[in-house]
Image 1 (cartoon, rainbow, N blue to C red):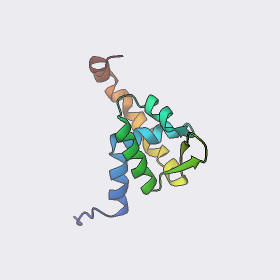
Image 2 (spheres, rainbow, N blue to C red):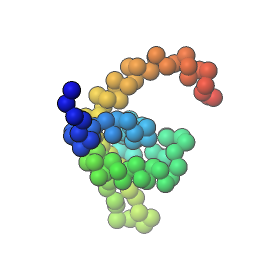
Image 3 (spheres, helix red, strand yellow):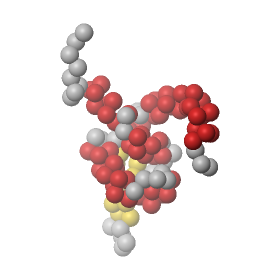
Image 4 (tube, rainbow, N blue to C red):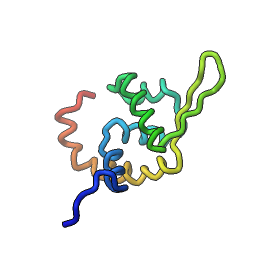
Length: 111
């Protein structure tokens, strides 16, 4: 079996796809451009600090674009890049597996 390279393209995709909040941010942005407050509201349970860190990471990975408008107060919008939109395949694959966990979720989730 060949050695595993932690910096190969497959490993980099795995790091993104395995990041709980990052994949949920991508899923939210698949619906379209959003502001920080919209993402924060939609992703219940994420702290402002974590959201900010994950958005910064996604920008560094080339998954999202951050646009700052020269207004007072400043307005910032986030949208997926072409590379980020490719993760729709990963999100859809994960969503297709969701029914396998639905019964468990009903026992755990409070909603």
